[in-house]
Image (cartoon, rainbow, N blue to C red; front, side, top):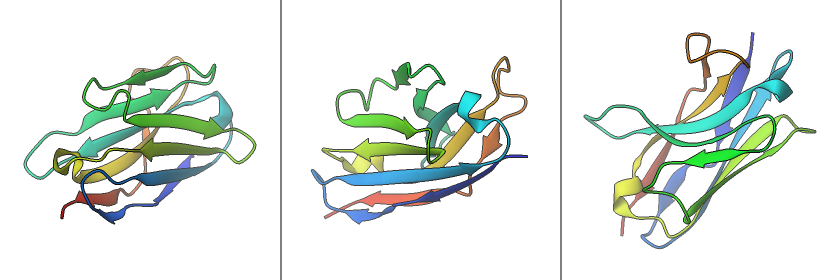
Amino acid sequence: QVQLVESGGGLVQPGGSLRLSCAASGSGVRAFAMGWYRQAPGKQRDLVAVIRSDGTTTYAGSVKVRFTISRDNAKNTVYLQMNSLKPEDTAVYYCNSRPPGTRGEYDYWGQGTQVTVSS
């Protein structure tokens, strides 16, 4: 079993920055892909960014350049640095962990953290 605990959400003004953290516990998590998804009210949950065990990353087009995903394997923690935040970034952000060789059927999820971008 893998447990994911997110932190770092909150209220920020447009143009501001936030850093989300997700601490993972469980066997073998360093081999897992780690990612962030977000879900705005009335919308589906969408991928924001993912970082694989080899360090390669993928970003949604809407956040590329503004957001950076990173991981600290010594701490089993993944981060999402969010800069130049926009009101449309407002959503609940969920940490995701995917075992190697799987396509979502064995994903683990955190409880979510609210990010609100508003003046």
